[in-house]
Structures are given as structure tokens and as C-alpha cells.
Length: 431
Image 1 (cartoon, rainbow, N blue to C red):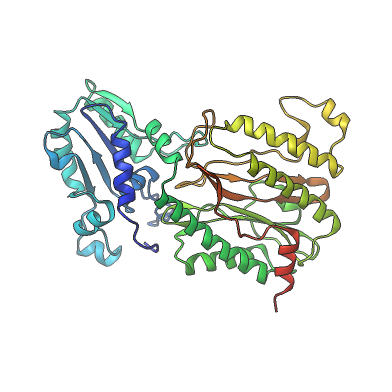
Image 2 (cartoon, helix red, strand yellow):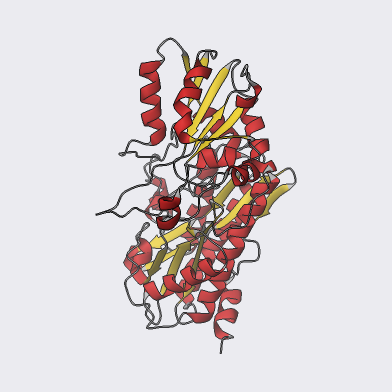
């Protein structure tokens, strides 16, 4: 791993929180993600399953976590089953966890090789009454490939029909939405790396550059600061491309007089940053660009002030929509007639701001959390209003990552330049 070692107390604390919500005499099993084949004998870069990482800190394929708080044999109250290395794997794939390294990373003392899992698990199931099975229940997920967790679940349903089965996902959703101090520090590191990349772009971008050159500058800064990868596919959208919400081609020229919308974030220790900034390619906003930008910035500032523990995201988005409506009127995009005649299910402002104001953030860029329950203290969210005027070729989005605390918001991106004057001063002070 590129990232520095993480305090094992994070994962010890997470397991304690999970076991505190398990039913008596129950086993929970979590599987690593599969290595996903691409073509020929190649694989996509491995990305660990967020739940097993959250509970163990183990960042390696072919891993299994077993949790059984009421095990009659105390050594199996928690256990890891890992890929056993050999000379061939060491030569072709590189280093894998030793037992000592796995203990140091996770705080789990019982370490076995994965080949031992079937026999030990069968023995323990003879004593257990309930089995917790894990699955990806993120409400944004669209899953076409069967995961290792789901293959295991299907097998268990057939092999142990007399046992009670429970879902781990609701517990994980409750636990993962509120971030601990350790997680806050990891998220801040991801955001700090992202800030360095943003400042590099402000210093380097100029008319005639290609969008992919901007992306290369960002990637350079990520890798040299221990980021594992981009947290998601970077959007580097100049000119009218900024009106395409998920534009990822990043293959056009950045032209004099255009704005460029950049949506990117570093992933550090599996934790994700998510930043959007919109800047002028030539270092100066036009009057119209400045007018629309400041309208979007006004919405973001007011939306940030609305975020608090106990809010319901659906209601929050509706309130932000009212602010956006007012700003769009002020810059000549909506009229009173537009608003009077609007369809309540798709308000008039949606023509120019068609997405939500934010989402949960953490181990996944669209992290798990319940959109219909009160948002708790410790939740980390994005705040990202946008204004997209296709007829003018202007697309603007401004995004910060924030955490709800007992004393208000903690903004991970509080010192990321976002005012018009800040952006222009930095871009025009370069050599």
C-alpha cells in the first residue's frame, strides 16, 4: 500500500460497534472483493470491499473476516483468513500479509490461511444459531456482476437452511455513516492531497492545454503524495462539456475565454475526497461568467449553513432548491411566470440544477447512509450545487466536503480557493 499504516484501534473500535448490534450466538462473515478480470490474463486494479476494510483494515484480495462474539472457543470470537503466499506468488505478485503484519494492521490475534476456513467455519456453525451475511445495499448501486459476498450468501442459504439468516448491511449503514476521529484524519489527508492537485492546476493551466493534460497534473500530484488512486473518474470539462454531468472523455482543448469544471478527488487509505471547482482557463472570469459563478457560490454558502444533525436529505434538497430558484431569477434565467407555471414534481430551477445538493462520503465516494432518516452527528457529506446553461455553454459546480459535529460543520476544504478574487489572484500571480 502507498498509504502510511493506520492505527489498529480504528478497526478494533469498529468491530466492537458491530458486535454490539449482533443478535446472541451469531456469526458474521465478510469477504474481500474479487480481483476483476479485464482482457487476456490481465486484471483491473484491486479495490478492497469497504465493509471488510472498515472492520479489519486488511487491504488484500482473497481475505475473509469472521466475527463470532459468543464462540465457545474464545480464539474464534474474531478471526482472519488470508491468502497464503509462496515463492511463486512472491516472485510474480509481490508481498502478501504475514500473520504478524495482519495482527498489527487489524488488532485480530487469530490468523489462518484461507484454505482452513471451510473446516473451521463448519465447526463453528454447529454451535451458532444465526448467520449474518453481507451484501452491497447502497441505494445507488446497480450490480450486474455477482460478488464474492453474494456467492457465499447463496451457498450458505443452501447449506444451512435451518439457521437464522440476518443482513449485515443495515448495521454497516448505521455504523459507517458516522465517522470517528481516525476516519476524520484519513479523510482530511485525502482532501489535503486533493488541495495540492487543485493548486497545481491553478498554477499550470492555460489556453491551448488539453483536458487530459490537466488530468495528468492532478494524477501526478496524487501519486507523489501517497494517494492510492483517483477516488472516481475525474471530470475535466471545459466549455460546453461542463453541462454534461458525468463527462469523463477529458479529450478537448481548453480554450481562451472558456470556463473549466473540474470534479476530482484523491483516494487515501480507501477514504475518498470529492472536490469540484470551476475556473477560467485564461485566469479571468468574464462578467457573465462571474455573475453565474457568484450565484452558484451564494447557493453553496447558504446550503452549507443549512446542514445540521437531524435533517432529512429530501427536505434539505427542497430548501436548497428555493435558494437556487431565487438566484436563477436574479441572473435572468427564471421568471415569475416560469415559477408560477412550474410542475411541482420537477420545479423550474431543475432546468439549470438537475441533481441533488450532496451525498454521503467516506470509504466510497457515494457512501452508504439513509436518505430518509435524520442525518446523525459524524456524517460526512458533499455540498455541490451547480448551474448548467447549455444555451450559453456555461457549466458551474462548486463542491466542498463537510462533517457534521456537535458544534456545527467541519469543512475539510475550508482553505480551498473558491472566491472569484482568490482564484484570479492565484492564476495571475504565476510566473
